[in-house]
Image 1 (cartoon, rainbow, N blue to C red):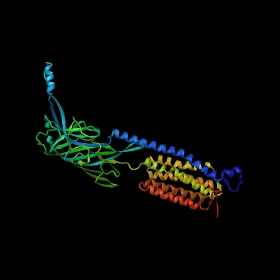
Image 2: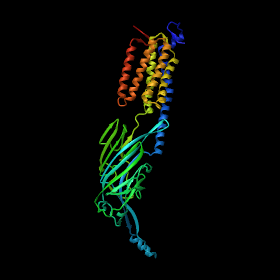
Image 3: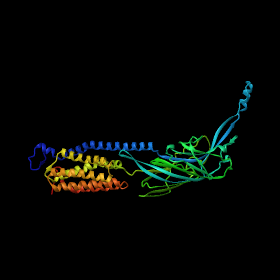
Image 4: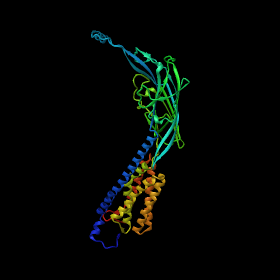
Amino acid sequence: MIQNETETATPLRTLARSTPVKLLTLALVNVILLIPLFRVMFLIDERSLRQSEAAREVSATWSGPQTLVGPILAVPYVEEVTPSERATQAALKAGLPPPDATYTTWELYRLPKELRWKGTVEPQVRSRGLFEAVVYQATLEAQGTFTAPDWATTDATPHGRQRYDKAYLVLSLSELRGVAERVTLRWAGVSHDFQPGTKHMPAPSPGLHVPLDLSAWPPGTTIPFEIRIVRRGSQELRFFPGGEETTVELSSPWPSPGFVGSFLPQERRLGEQGFEARWGLTHLGRVVPQQWVGRGGGDFTTDSFGVRLVIPADAYQKAERSIKYGLLFIFLTTLTFFLVELISPVRLSAIHYLLVGLALVLFYLLLLALGEHLSFGLAYLLAAVACTGLIAAYARSLFGSGPWALALLAALGSLYGYLYGLVQAEDLSLLMGAIGLFVILATVMFLTRKLDWRSLRFVP
């Protein structure tokens, strides 16, 4: 039963209402409330993890993040290895026929002189139960030029035969199952269809290739090409800057892109209707050379760049940001009840503070549950109205005063409005938090300026 000042005080009640015991009790209640608060925080992390798993499942059935490397022109070279004089003499001395020459196949790889990618990215939001993931279909066209390979410009000193008639063009892709349509190549005006595999080139990932005959092209000749490809993927689309001069232009109706990789776009336009971005790069900014001889290339992933289709802060991210202020909310609410208790003749017990704190914790659980079905703003409003209404009605019953209940309702409403502003204003959250805490501290100092902390009574 709630006691008031007119009741007979006993030594035990006097001790219970002493300043050290009262403040220790409030501190203990706040510590106890951390247990359910952390449980709700773990639940938010668990649901967020399940959303990430759902996104991976959608990617597994659609196609994952995509990186395009190439095109890369490859020209085989058959090198004849003549046996040494010592090996020949040893064979003859042993009465054996001299060893035959052996042949080793290498490749000369060359990247485009000019490479211009242009495309559109059409996003789709796919659901797996309550969880969402973003996928896309990108229609991409590449134009550029190659310089016909010239062995004289390499460090190799071949003593064999260049197989220009066995040349091929490679386009490396993250996943072949993301190819939505036939991929075509126009090489010097002649159409070709890409075939699966990267042939002899150990590319960084699976890919496609087109056999070409370069016999009619003298070394150093400029050869134009065009490629059209439709790719399905999820979350990210990246490119490798393969040309001496590389240009990438992308547009999409997705309103919240995130630019990723080693290079940011030189030009970009963001808005509610989508984005446009343009990259312009030279080969001097990457680690892979323009031409090399060997059996493979280099690290094509280090210098990749592109765009990530970001889902704006979802219910789990915003609920997580909100609950970070949970301890502050509990402390401010219990402090408000404590100040009201000092002014009113009613005395509250630790159970009353604990129940009020549990109602505050329940707000975050309601926010999480409603946020999975409603927009965050509506879920926040419903959860805040429910919890503030419950606490105000409880305060009306405790203090037996409508004005006090309305005052608490206004205070809690202000706190929830302040928290909503912190969650929404990501860039200004630190500034708003600092100003808000300063205002709260100033208010508490002003209200308690005439409080005698030894007797917990206001003095004139």
